[in-house]
Each structure stands twice: as C-alpha cells, then as structure tokens.
Length: 462
Image (cartoon, rainbow, N blue to C red; front, side, top):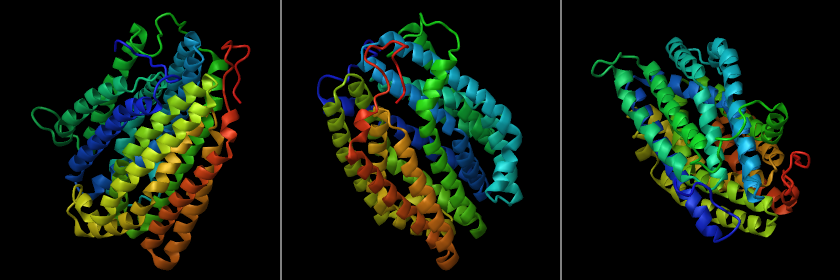
C-alpha cells in the first residue's frame, strides 16, 4: 500500500514477472479453490444442481465477455500511459473505464434477465429440474452482474500499474466471505434461510460486492496505482469508445471461446446429465491447471504494455519470451498429474462412478495439450499488452470454432462422445501453435496505442 505504482520499464524483468505473477496466480488459485468448494457444496444437492450451476456459469461467462473487453482495453491504455510517465491521463482513462463498466453491466442486466431461461434452452437443457434451477441462478447473478464488470476492470487497472498484491488481498477477503456464506445460504445453517442453488448465487454477489467497494475506496484515497481523487466525475464518450475500440477484439475472443464451450455443451447434452456433469467438472479442473499460465500471462501483459509505452521494444520482447518459457513449463508439469491420476482429481467433486469414468476419458485427451494452452495464454497476453487484440481474436475463432467445434460435431456422429474430447484437444494444439507463429512475425512491435507526448490530440488506437 505504501508504494502502489511500480515502474516496469527498469530493473530485472524476471523480478517484475514474478512479483506480478505470484500474487496473480495465488488469486486465481484462491478463486478456483472457492469454485471447488462451491461445487462441492452444490454437488451435495445432486447432479441436477451441478449441471444447473455449470450450464448457467457458461452462459454467464458468455455475457461477461463485455467486461473482458473493457478491462483489457483499460489495462492496455493505463499501462502504456504509465510507461510514458503520463499519470494524469492514466487516471482519467481509469475513471472512464469504471463508468463504462457500470453502464454496460446495467444494460446487460436489463436485457439478459428475461432471456435467462431461453439461453438454457438454446444449449438444449431439457430436463426440467436443471432448467428451473439454472434459471433461478442466472436471474440472481444478472441482477448484480455489475460486481463482475467492476471487479475485472479495477483489477486490470491495478495490475497495469504493477500492483498485483492489492487485488489479491481483496480477493482473499471477498472469497472468504463467499465461502463462509455458501453453507449458510445453501443449506440454511443457523438462522439463515435454506436457499439451495440460489444461496450459492447470493453468496457470490455479496463477496464480489465487498471486493469492489474496497478497490474503489483505495482508488479514491490515492492508495492505488492511479488516483481518482481529483479526476472529474463525468462521462467522456470519446474516451469510452477508445477503450471499447481497443478491447472489442478481446471481447470477441472471449465470446468465441465461450460460444464454443456452449457449442460443446450442445453436443454433449444429448448424452445425458452424467456426461454434462463430467464435462463441467473436467473444465473446472482444466482451469485449475491453467492458473499458473493465467498468472504468468497477466503478468506479461502490463510489463509489455509499460515497456511498449516507453519505446523499449527489445525489453518487451524479452518479457514475452521469458514468460512463455515459465508458463509452458509449469502447465505441462501440472497437466502430467491429471494425465496419470485423472480419477483421483474427479473424486474431489463426485463419487458417481459414471461421471468419473466419462471424466477420466476426457482428462486423458485434454491433459497432453496444456503446453499448447500456455502458448496461447502467454503470447496472446503479450500481443494484447502491445496493443494487438485483433490477431488473438482471429486465432481463437479459427481454432476453437473452426477446428474444435466442427470436429466435435463431426466426430461425435462417428465415434460418439470420444469425438468431442478429440475435437477439444486438437483445438488447443492448433490455437497454441498459431499464436506462436503469429507472435514470431513481429508485427505486434508496431501496435503501440498511445503517443509518448500523452495529449488527447495526439493519442490514437492503432
């Protein structure tokens, strides 16, 4: 808290990466630990509850891609302005990003609430108990979805300034609140109401909301990488459009990624709730393995951003190379455990032998591709930090939709459920390989989004 902003354009790159990556990774692990605990609690309500929360979660992540765009656009601009030593403009951009995140989330709530049940039916959720529970869960989260938008945007702003510790501490606090409320609201312990799946949703919103309030207080009190204390509280449509123009491709990248996952659910659902539950649990485990990759990738982005802003392209390139080696090594090693001992990890969530058998088969196809996923994560974020958000989006579209989903649909007709697993695995290999090849062209080195002079009249989005 005493030194909220870090200069990532000087000093040891390895030190900067580890200083950012360790708390970011801890935050992801903590969040994933909560997701595991949450799924364990929900799992005690039965397979229908697991499927309902899992299907709803996938739809909500699809909705949340707008927050990804806003947070990515804001993070890139703030990092490059701080690298160019224009702290006033970095703070101004941050204010506009916060307002934009709030306005967008309100619009999402208004539009999404009446369409919740329709969304579940689109992915071929036909079992009435799953449909009812999922609709209830989505309604509650949609009402308070501004907490998701603001949390992602504020976290990106802090990391852009080289502060990953504060968001981690806030996440720890909000997650502890979430975990504490889960059993109380799901099972009705003590004098709390027994809300079932709805209790999980309420606990999530309360935990996120507390975290957002804390981060906002830090920004307005001057204990953040940027200070909102003297920034005029008004909407600037031009600035908001600049943030959106830069972040729209990250939103589209997230959209295609989550759309494809919904497509996989569309293919899997006819195989029954056990196949659906196995897929959802395995995807949770996949995220657990990806945590180190996410941590390194989200550390690479602000370091690349600040150095590109300071016209230190060679230093930015070395950051991406170093981050890629670390991320790939970690994810490959951890993924090996899932390949060798799949059933052990699946039993954390369920003791149903049918789900474990299906899930073990999926994990043995998925695990060998984790190194390629690391390529995609780290190099994609390096490209983002430099201002290239279009290329990662196109690569994701081609790999996930053009390869993964198409293969899953075709192969499932000939070899059944195993064809879905093969399609998902091959899409990861194609995406990682393509991201590496594009990065190697070096075109990202010209994608700076600001002018070092820092004035509004000369700033542009390339």
